[in-house]
Picture 1 (spheres, rainbow, N blue to C red):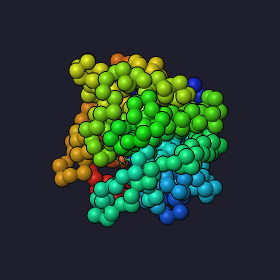
Picture 2: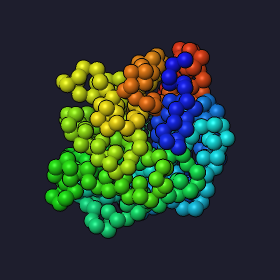
Picture 3: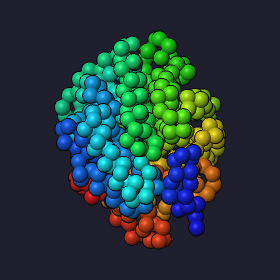
Picture 4: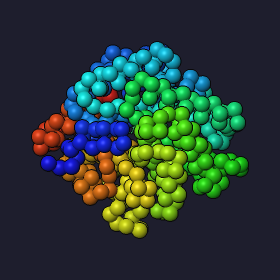
Length: 363
Ligand SMILES: Cc1cc2nc3c(=O)[nH]c(=O)nc-3n(C[C@H](O)[C@H](O)[C@H](O)COP(=O)(O)O)c2cc1C
């Protein structure tokens, strides 16, 4: 049997196989931010389908700034946490593990904050967005506290790990990027300074949960507003970042790319993926993601072009070749709750192709 379908443990995180569900925002909560019975069953179906690690959609960590719309389920009040506890229990009943993705949308929030003040482009529907406020000391403390509380609550309700959303242009990522971080103080300028706040968050979270409670950190080169953005221009810069994450006490890196198999620094190595580089440079277990059993990259998935299913083998080879420890599957798991079972039977050609219309309901 291929390694991908064999069990694996990272400290106390024990997984039935090496497949993760990628975090995917669905905006299906009611305005109270509580996971509904439909949301609970949506996650249960992926656990019944034998996904090893289910990472939740991004979930807002506080009611001041952290989320962008009220239909994003949140991770703050007792009622919201009770809803997530039902998700945890449903997933455990089916034999899988669960990590909520702790999300601060930063510049995209309903009450936006970021490293630097700026104006944001209008939303897709044409409505304008409020101006972004530059974070002051009060905001720094408030965000760190929100991450601490969310992480502690995740452990308390029985989650198997947490994922800190440090990717895609949201709050923590917007500090790392020189495009969105124009600060002149110790949080801006050099890469060492730009990573300071995300590392402070990771360090604070590590200190707030049990020593062995697994912390996953998701990062990306790309941002939503700039799909081609590069934050780490060479392996040396990536090494500085992933080493700092490791020293902060992060246990697993989730390397968000459009295509798990493309080289991270093609001018240095024509094969090694960004995940492979992160794994080698940090010595940490790493999750690869992007375009597994789909043909269109994520940024091209919402047009009229019809997706085609593709072989999972190139992604599985990353595990065989020690470039990745886990493979996260996104859109293909929206289209196929029982993706793992179908692929394990060798029937990947039977997978339902992803289509944007599948996002309308929680199938
Ligand atoms: C509908 C949708 C919602 C997403 N929401 C999130 C999110 O909340 N957090 C996050 O880190 N990534 C999010 N992503 C990115 C996915 O986690 C994943 O990285 C991306 O879809 C590439 O994987 P795929 O090619 O297997 O779909 C989202 C993607 C999709 C399609």
